Image 1 (cartoon, rainbow, N blue to C red):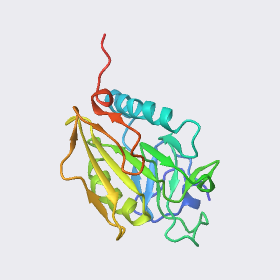
Image 2 (image 1 turned 180 degrees about the vertical axis):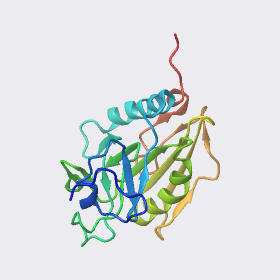
Image 3 (image 1 turned 60 degrees about the vertical axis):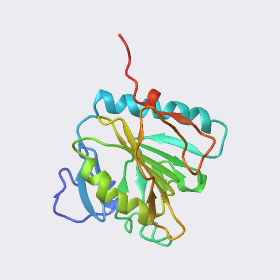
Length: 199
C-alpha cells in the first residue's frame, strides 16, 4: 500500500518507509516517524563540508567509507532481524563512517556505522542529544560526535567495555585539533571546521 501522507501517530517499519510518496525527509525511531528539519542552514552545510574534507582525504583508498546525509542507516533490533518488515529504526546521520563493506547496499547501510557525527539545529537538538544518543549506544556505534554550530563545540562519546557511551570530560572548542578514538591518526582542526568563508 502506498502512503502519501503517513499518520504521525502510527507505527511503521522500513518496508512502510520505502512505499511513501512524501516530499518531507523523515526518520523512523522505534517505529515512530520524526520529520526532519527544513533544508539545512548554510552554517550546517558548511560545517558538514568542512568535516567531510579531511575525512574523505583520510579514508581515500582505505576500506572505511564516509557518507553525508541524506543517507539511510537501517538499525536492526537484532542481527537476525534484517528484513525490511522487521526494521523499525531508520536514521539519516549528518556524517557517518562505515568500515564493514558488507553493511552497504544500494539503499544505504544496514547495521551500525563505526562513527556518526550529528550537527545540531534548533529542530533536531533534543532528538540528537537524547533519543539518538540512546539509539546509537544500543546499536553499538563505536563513536558519536555532537557538533554545536553556535557554540563552536564538539562533544565526543565512545563506547566503553560495557557497551555504554563514555563522554570526554569537557567539550572540544574551536581552538582544538581532535582525533576520533577509533582513528587516532586522523586529525581534525576545529578552527577549520567552524571557519566561515570570507567575502
